[in-house]
Structures are given as C-alpha cells and as structure tokens.
Image (cartoon, rainbow, N blue to C red; front, side):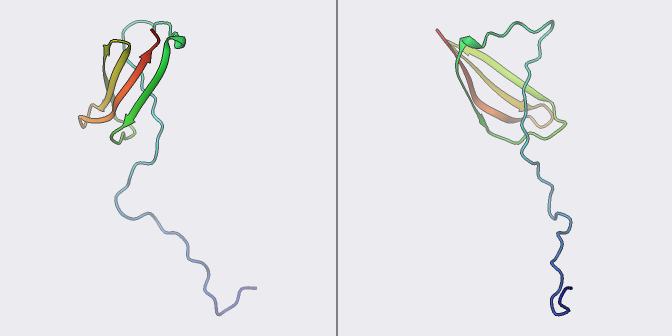
Length: 95
C-alpha cells in the first residue's frame, strides 16, 4: 500500500521543442538504367565515408562519384535541400 505522504513518480510527458531526426541507417543505391552489374567485392581493399549532414526520411538522395587512380570518390546530398549528407567517401580498389 503506497504511503499517503509520498506522491507517485512523475510520468514523462510529450517531448518538447523541435522534433529532431533520430539515428537512421541509410543505404545508398546508385541509380543507373538496366540491370545491376555484377559486383566483385574482392576488388575492394578499403572504404571510408564521413557523415557530414543529416538526412531526413522521405528525402531524395543524389550521389556524385568519380574515379581518381585506384579510388572511386563519392558524395551524397539531399535533392530537396541541396545539403551534403555524406562527403569524403572513397572506395579503394586493389591494384
């Protein structure tokens, strides 16, 4: 039986302030016409990326990529906001 001198524990109310995006894992797919080419993961020796901005659910993500020597460099950005989401990304290929 609860003590009449103690009030019950406070309950959490609705969140206050602006809604912030939660941590989401995003998979980026490069769009190209036709069937996907076969991927040979044995050719990849290293990959890295820097999450530079926030991606919101429902946005369209565009990618830019180019090749420099044994590396494929890329970045991803939000089409609606023109904000960079992933930068300094690189896939290093085995020579």
